[in-house]
Length: 131
Image 1 (tube, rainbow, N blue to C red):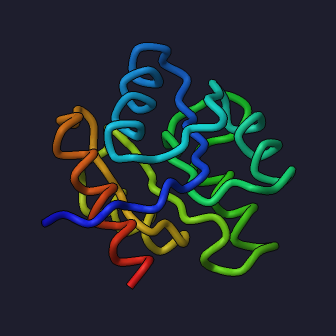
Image 2: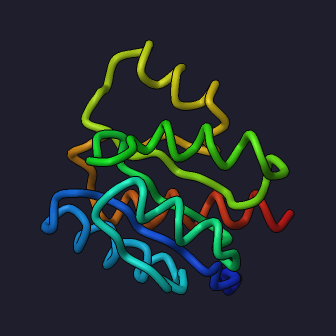
């Protein structure tokens, strides 16, 4: 019998409105509590700095600040687990994946993604974090 995942307070950030909506729906499918949806990195960082975000799903390529710049900023001033971060990128090469994970991301998802598979991956991550 599946266990109920904790509804992490989640931020979704992507500059493409269609992808942003798809990421939001996917997070909801995974049982997350999407409390903020933004279209650029600076807005994402501002939401995170206000506090209360437990998971940030960040696109790499966004205006104002990239997802990796947002990640670097929060990792320089907060504990490794606050908030958890999933990077989403169209870059599928090994160097991009390594850069994302070395920057402190908890996971790296490539575009295009299957909403169903992404939701399953988010559920897996929540289970790992709660273990």
